Amino acid sequence: MKYYKYIFLSLLICVAGLFTACSDWLDYSPKDKETEEQTFGTRQGFYTAVNGVYNRLISDVMYGKNLTWGMLDILALHYQTPASLVYEGFSASELANYNYSNTNVADLMESIWDEAYATILNINVILDNAETHRGTVLSEEDYNLIRGDMLALRAFLHFDMLRMFGPVYSRDPEQLCIPYADSREAKVYEQLSARSIIYDHLLPDLEAAENCLHEYDPIITQGPLSTTEEGADNYTRYRQLRLNYYATILLKARVYLWAGDRAAALVEARKLTDDPQVRTYFPAVDSDELLSGSNSTPDRTFSTEILFGFYDSGRDNIYTSYFESSLTTSSLLTPRSNFVQESLFGTTSLYDYRARSQWTMSGELAYLIKYKGLELTATQLEDGTYPFWTYFMPLMHLSEAYYIAAECLQETDPDAALDYMNEILATRGRQQLASGSNLLTEIQKEYMRETWGEGQAFFLFKRLYMNITRDFNGNSTSSKTASDNNFVIPLPESELINR
Image (cartoon, rainbow, N blue to C red; front, side, top):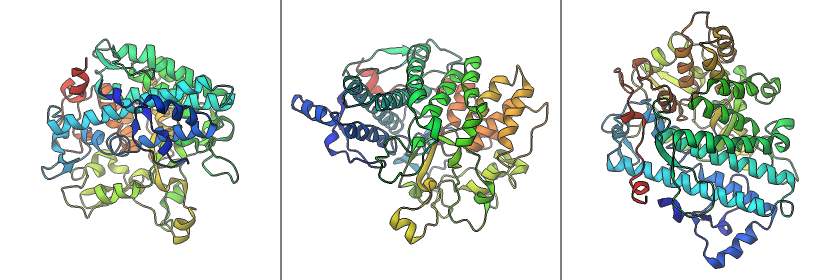
């Protein structure tokens, strides 16, 4: 594998702190082993390393762009892609046409692959050192928090590589696809079948993570802790910015659903939907605050309901560079005329809180303002007293657990499925669904409304092997037929050459 050269983090030039950036990850030479020992010789060193891993996620290559509002949403046909629209230096139409053989597209996919596996191998360095220093440098609490966090994040990254580069699971679960890198060793890891990735690696990692976090994650007894505690080190706060216990449970539900194991997915989803404590910690967005015309800092990402996300101090630039209505067609990402009004939200667009807070309508066009900057005062900017959600980017919503539960039940117990759907719709200002509604279609539409700008729709279409019909196609009024050629991204050439 090409990523073998990115084994270890140059920890000396990481800056400690919750929202700091980190340098490239480099090989340790023999003399640098002393550096590694020094780094992991303190509790602070471990948490600095964990922060470094998470800070890799916000790069444009990863979740800061490609794996959320950028490349994946273009693949989901969310946006018009005229020839003039440039993405990462090439025509975005190459992505919308699933032209994976295009050199620029192939290079982009390879950069994502390399970055994901480089990060995974460095997670393994942290896990390895956590075992070595358990009971000495790390208390049982710190050991379990770090181990659970890193195991869950390792699974999270592998799962997204599987969803991108693996087969349509329902069509060929035995197809060899990606490797699972579960050690710090620099070697060529064997390709595994999609089924083996899930049942032999992803789920065992997530089970182990759940066991670590269940007893020690403060989110279970204290909630997300999304504030700074004066005089404390704050390493164990801001749990929404880490793969915490509840996010790990939702990830398990995602994985089971991808594998078509609805019974197991339902069990995991219900750990969230049926536990009243979860709604206490992750309450529905306050619609009065959200929609108040006098509120200059609306929580457009519904941050109170996010189980896992990341902090991006450059979030404002996303809006001004790609979504602002004044942009030219060379950079503007916007759906086709009337798509948002007629297909995405329909006749309820005047009432749906997401339509009213995350979109601005201008005639037949609609512009995404989900990541638009907030109007902060000089004092807020100077002393950092702005709201937590100012730079928050979502990756996992609590609402997804309700969608999973509804999908798992829509054939066997449609009344229960309807209840799960209506519970979420009630928090979105939408009309309740009546018995006999086409639940699967409604669930699909809800995924689109809820996670626009987050890269999840492409995975929905792939999992269900859906034709992207006019009602789901923001790129054009035609329908894109489901196809392995469209949904299965080829493994990078460098990965194949090194085998």
